[in-house]
Length: 123
Image 1 (cartoon, rainbow, N blue to C red):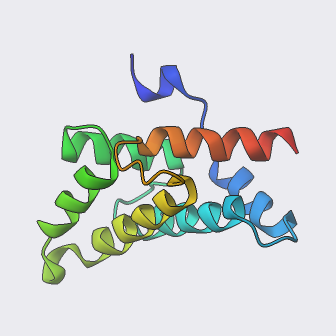
Image 2: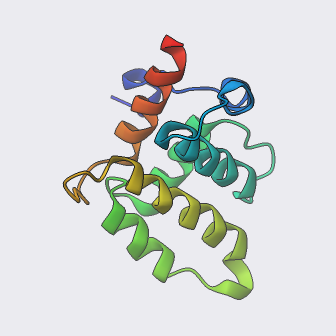
């Protein structure tokens, strides 16, 4: 089952509107801002949606998108050729603080994005 089959992630437009319309400072808004930054920073031409970023990361990392796997991937990137990827992954790593009540570094990025999606679609 692919990510697209399993999850119906928030779109970039929904993300933008959620950030603009959420007048509070909360963990969902902060997480949404980090996700938007990561999508914007990722250096693939015409990549515009969070689901596309996650698909690219899964293709490159070839493991679950956990904090430790993303951090390991980040450490292998080269600043002179991968600066934008480094920016994007750093933003994604910040999203894990949003859901690390018990410091669960094994939670998958897809689950965090799904929680974010559910939160803003209920509003």
